[in-house]
Image 1 (spheres, one colour):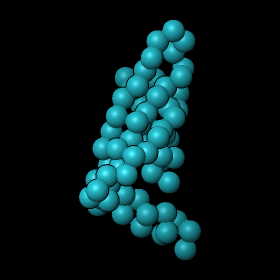
Image 2 (cartoon, one colour):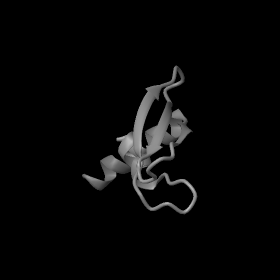
Image 3 (cartoon, rainbow, N blue to C red):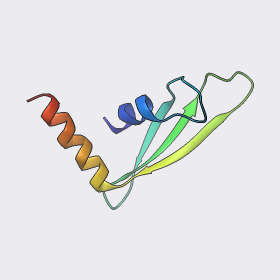
Image 4 (cartoon, one colour):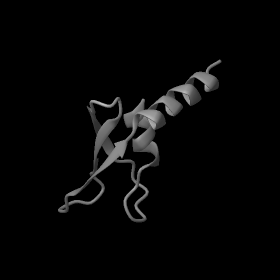
Length: 68
């Protein structure tokens, strides 16, 4: 869920391509998200974002509300 949410919303510069996202769980309950945009042949576009536990829990609450 976090990877899908970041993939849908995380962008670099003004690129409109959806990046791929790989999650690494952090000890505090958050995530380190490694993003990669493959829309740029011949150029590696990678970056990382951290999602804290409170934000991740908020996303779960939003998802539950959408499906209730």
